[in-house]
Picture (tube, rainbow, N blue to C red):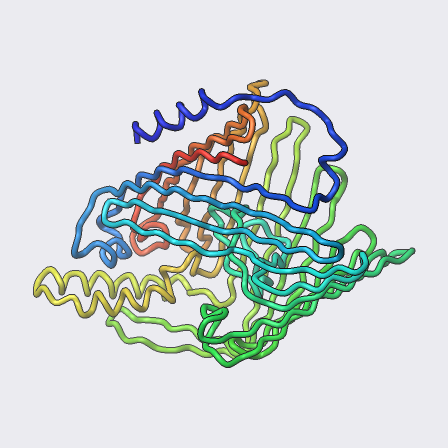
Length: 427
């Protein structure tokens, strides 16, 4: 950690600041654009050796803490020629962790666009769609990868799709209408993580701007995933308050629950609803507040999660007594599609407060984020400080503190706290 801190300080002191200037040509679309960032992140995790999810991941190699260094390169570019545009964003990552080294390379997006006029666009390729108005969660994000509430602004990997946009503007209360149909194929090598191969999934979004209120209607056909539909809205109440919400209805849902004895049962429901309500408020002193409540209709009840944690405790005790890890390996497999997922419960609260340049300290933005399971009252709280005083460089320090009783979601996470040092250089 000290070596990383010294390296971040060296980057900060050697970078050269540039004077601000205005050039109108910078806002014109150029035939070729290239940019991106390189990021160095150092993390230290203090582990919770009494937690169920720690026992699943570390029963063969016990640790009290983990150090992790991640180097990420995210270049992106656009190539334009008339009505055609080619867009790409790559992701290259090397991850050095106490136990192992991993590397990954992929394209988060790689697609072509054809836009013969302002009212029509045809896109084909790997595209990260963004459906929904929620900041931390998006229950109506039917054709996108799940957002991480700890990093909701982080760019995500898209799916390979064929999509179009028709946009029409009007006079009157209904000011804009836009329709976005989407086709998402799944084969052995294309969109394999969306489901089993052999399906062509159809989705659509209808956008309305009605009396200064943004409204979307979404739909996903029955294919790899069950049929689902939803609606969202966003509206500014004055100049400093915005309210938003989402509602999704998902048909034919199934979830697997495990009792304290290890018996797995699949529970089926004809349909469930998930929804989100939130607001964003900016004070006169440049403090931004974001508050959201999320109801995960397909999530686990508190007692269902508690039963699974009890099963892990029993399996771990069996391993200590006999050396047989069959029950632990089974629990680990069940957890990947269950309680080990981000926010697997039913009811959550998200609160974030960020202050721009407090006490006139230039380029500093402190923030505090709280994510709480409203059922078992466990939570994660994350203070952070962001510094942007050097051109094209962001420096961030952030910590996560997890708190919860035994058998609660955050109380059974594998780590008690995590500290991050991050430097991101844009080019």
